[in-house]
Length: 116
Image (cartoon, rainbow, N blue to C red; front, side, top):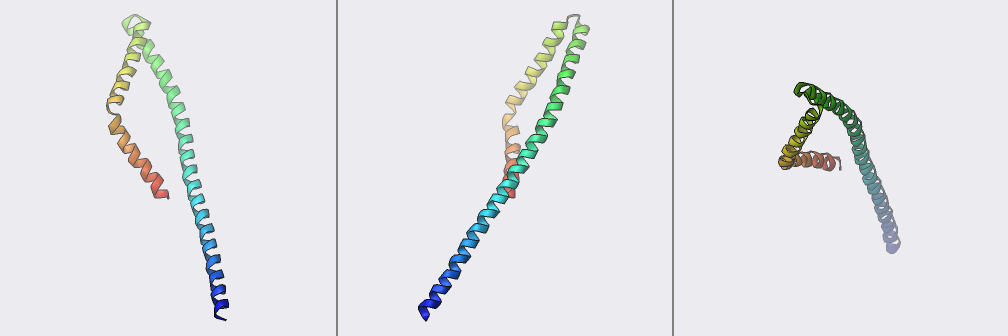
């Protein structure tokens, strides 16, 4: 009798462990899907906004180059000045890259690890 009770209890424990593992796996899959979809939607929004901002920046840069060209009397000089402006911005961003990386890492690690 005692062995049958123990065998029955072990069967219940085994079923409980199987259910726990299945539910835990489902929970992690759901959390990873949620995190992945949040990242995909953020990337999609960034691509759309970045694309429109890039087009606007392109037209503004061309118009600024032509304006500077008419101001200096040479269109090539206007484009050169606009190009130098972007090179200067690139150098400044390169110098400040560590200050830019740290807040981004903190923000995205908080986003990722708070979701899990």
